[in-house]
Structure formats: structure tokens, C-alpha cells
Image 1 (cartoon, rainbow, N blue to C red):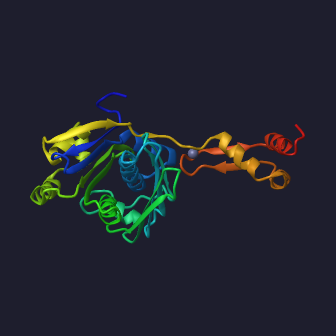
Image 2 (cartoon, helix red, strand yellow):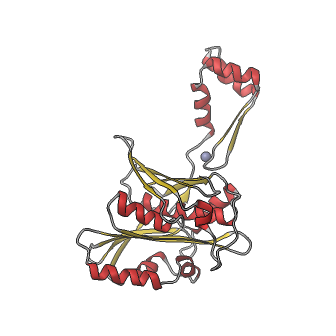
Length: 298
Ligand code: ZN
């Protein structure tokens, strides 16, 4: 990956520990999601913003952790689901990737119109040990950046600012994607936080900056100033957890009777992974050999 164009995720702190900061360039990840799901511009922007947040939230996890984000609004997109882990792996889908709405009066993609302004944002964090942690907030805008900020502030009680952007070109393809998350730690200087809010309001869009070649680190520097310490986190990358072996195990788990019924009625089994849009087909001979294995006739 070239340093200028590859996806990059950084995390760190600013103002001598008063802020926790994250920033990401997620263009390749979001392009891959768009390609896999054939997402039209508005759907790609919504899915991409959620995946960009997911990548950064993955970097907040301890090693071995995973998280799932579910966004269910009353708009035409249906549901957005993102999975991410601490190693930078991200996958996701949207129920209706063919949604594209007319642009807003300011020319931007109408993400809130596609997501809906009423609904929920759920986050499930799982370390595979205890009960998963679940947090949920109502949607407050549907543009997603504000919704994630509201989630952190209300559900995790960490006052946060979130910027998420996906730029789709005239050809309908994702050109730039990225974002940032700034989180105020207890005791953070109120005057500095107010100044930061003004800076954010006046700053150009994240994607406008990325398209000028601004790096995630420089993006953070423009927001919080030079009192910044950042470290690279694993680069976000699309990766699905499905595999032919997993589907095979699922088929075997059905048991001999159900497998025999599938063989008799359909003669084949087909499963589809919503996350990566992959289809796994098991033809008659393969199903028969699975059944033989279960019946010990091998
Ligand atoms: Zn998959």
C-alpha cells in the first residue's frame, strides 16, 4: 500500500491526555464494500460512513475484541450492519444497496434521507468471555456522524465529536472516505472544547481535505493543534469470516435427517453470506458425501 493512497488508521491523545483521538483514511475499505454489494451512491455513502466509524471503534477494542454496529432507521436503506475487530478487519452490508436519492439542496448525498431520521443505533462489543456489552441510542440525525457522537456521549458517557465522510464521484464510484473521533476525557478544559467546536464547524469536510492529500494525522492536527501524540493502529481492511468450511460445518450440524431431506427435495444447497455477498453452492454429490460422513458410511 502506498503511503499516500493506502488506508491508514491512527489513534492517540491530545492536550496532554485530555482528548482521546482517532482518524482514518478508509477509501479502499469503502470502495471494496461498494464493489461487493454493488451499492449505489447514497447507499455506498451510508454504508461507508458506518464502516469508517466501525474501523475506528475496532481500534478502541482490547486485543481479541469484536464489535457489531446495527443501524436501523425508517428510511429506504433498511438496516446497516458493520462488524469490526481490534486487528482492523471490517465487513458490512446494507439491506437495500440499490438505494440512491436525489442530492440535497447543498449538493451532498442525502444520507439521512436514505437511513431515516427515526430509528436506533446499536453497538455490541464482544470479547468472547463474558456477556457481550450492548449499547443502544435512538438516531438523532440519520447523517451518522452525529448519531455516533450521540452514542458515545449518551451510551458510553464519553463526550465525543465524530466526523465521517464518503465522497462519491460523478461515475458513481467511491473516491475518498475517512473520518475522525475526538473524545473528551474527564476534566478536559471546557474553553478548549468550545474552541474545538468552533474549529470543527469552520473546517472543510473530511473528504474535501482527504482529496487534497491531507493525511489522517494532519487532519487531527488541524482539529486539535500540535499538542498531539499518535500511534499507528492496524490498517482497516475488508475481511469476511465466512468460508466454505464454515458452511460445510453448518450443513453437518443440521443432522442426517434434515440433510437427507434437502438432498431429496432440492438436490443442492445454496447459502449466501450477506456480509461479503459470496454464494456457496453444494451440489448433489457433495451433499451426499456429507450425508455419508454423518451416517458413518464413509
Ligand atoms: Zn462472507
